[in-house]
Length: 239
Image (cartoon, rainbow, N blue to C red):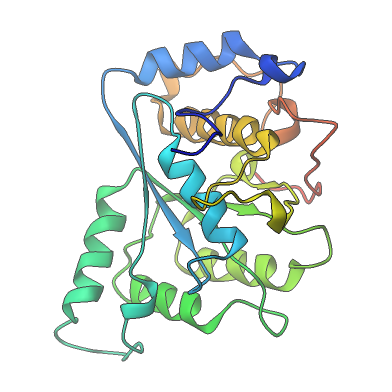
């Protein structure tokens, strides 16, 4: 087992301010059922930093959160428009997405845009409207300016998919490849704190309107982040 720990750490353990009351209220309201979050890496390389970040999210998710790393990207066939019978790997992907309450993407940038394998996955989902009204967010592990093309394209495609992009859950936390341990988990504790914030934002979006805690201000992730000012997200508006 990695020395990172068996669950995401509390920001207070690192001397950071955590909005514990808000977090506890959100989790308490949703504790009656398991929340399913599908984690999709845009990299086909198992040792990529993006996959490591999502693997960390899956392995150390808080109680009540079923965070699963999708591992079928390399096995998806090329998208065929109008395909009458979808291949088994595509059917399984669509089932996983429909069964999830939310989807979190983390992707590298290739040639100034999304990796072709991730775009192929999204094409299959768009064809069947599997992402329609689905809460989605992205996690960037790159420094600002290193993956803008991929991030912008991802948001464009997700908009075409009619997904619900949750700006308050989209974060950028630059990570060092050297911060991945021998088990493939990210040891940077800032990621653990940021992931707690992401889960809080996702849970808040899933609650019925009448049960949502009254926010101080929506929807900026910075308003809820326990990591700032160490980690910043580019303020590009949205909801």
